[in-house]
Image 1: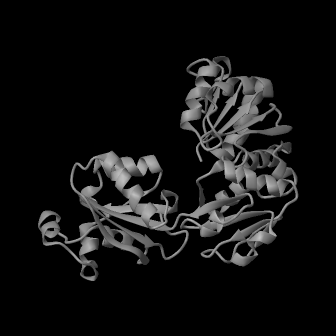
Image 2 (image 1 turned 90 degrees about the vertical axis):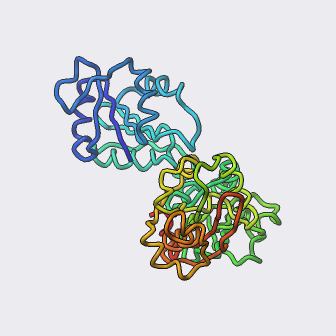
Length: 350
């Protein structure tokens, strides 16, 4: 995580330097306190500079009063999915406050770490943390799971915070380390809980039939293999792939990686898709494909064009660690698609 520290007093700069030894991050302050190459002067006003930091850093440490910090960050708040972690602390480090994005951004964890370094007190106000409960979004972060519906995640977490039990169904992750309020269930036991959480890589039929607060966390262990014509339109590519995933009960939240051949590594539509969906793009060389293409049905036209006879299946197969084929080569206009399940839940996208 990229960190940055902003301090407004000389004492704050001295505390920031102590943190810098462990965090290896830049420090910014007022020009009059910028006394060394390790402590930089803010190039603009504090309010404008905070906007720059919001776009460039995932963790922001503000050594200033809480009131100033709140006023400075207010214009740049978007959502808990996108906001960076913001921690505010006094210049002595006695009180370290998790101010913004405590769960998914990691501000609660960061505040605790800083308090340990300054012999101070971490101030955490999220209800689940106060009660020693792992909120659903924190569980998702720990297990590297995808979240599609944040409102439903909040509703299930509310059940936990109010003393209820959340039943967990997870066909693919059976050895889960679940904390207070969670109970691993067999499918038929779901109605005994106050809420239901499904962890999987396909849409859940259990949730469709559930009248309780419920949500799904997505295991991101699927690899999407893509072969396509040069210059393919991005909107068409995205729409076709979305339909393909939906047809087979998958979501782009299931994807740990998108895989294609080296000759397509700069194909604009594929690159744009990976960036928009925030999914790693894995490139497989034609030499790698040549070593396994005998396992797949190829095309003489494709072989004549790029030197190997197939792309989507071997690319996904290799990127998944020789994983399990879930959807064989599917032909769409100007593209071919396939889906493989990685050999390990954590493998896709590594």
